[in-house]
Structure formats: C-alpha cells, structure tokens
Image (cartoon, rainbow, N blue to C red; front, side, top):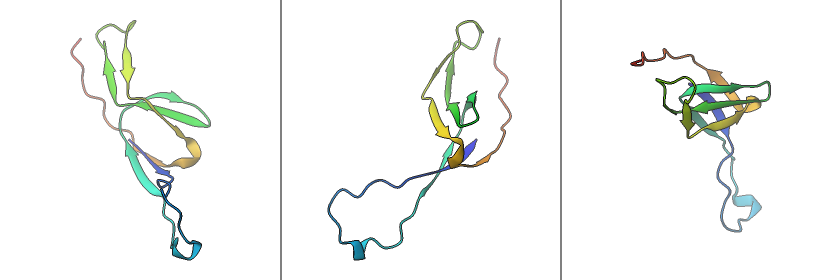
Length: 83
C-alpha cells in the first residue's frame, strides 16, 4: 500500500488571486503489487492475471508514482494463490 501526495485538480475558470484561499494537495492511497521499484519512480499494479503460469503473468491498471510524492509504503501480506 502506497500513500502519496498529488496536486489538486486545476480550477476550470478564471479566479481572482484574492479568492484563491489556501491551496491543498490531495492525499492518495494505492494498493497493489509493486511491479517497478526504481530510485525515482515506483509502479503499483492493482490487478494481476495469469498467475498460474509465471511465464505469462499480466497486469492492468498500473500507476507510476514519483518517489518524491510518496509519504509512506506499508507492506501487505500477499494472498495465497491457487497454483
């Protein structure tokens, strides 16, 4: 499980600078298998298929998160898969 910070969605219309207020970032959580563990980016896949054949495992929904945005990584116990 990866907790990370993302930028808030851009405002869609013109806004007076004095009306901006206090900007906030968005706290996000992503859960899945860590499929890439680089120095600058980490990639998490929430879905995995073909797990009974290690030569043809597929993943979908992969998200890549910059390391500088990561607040915390919590290892989770991987479920036992039927082989």
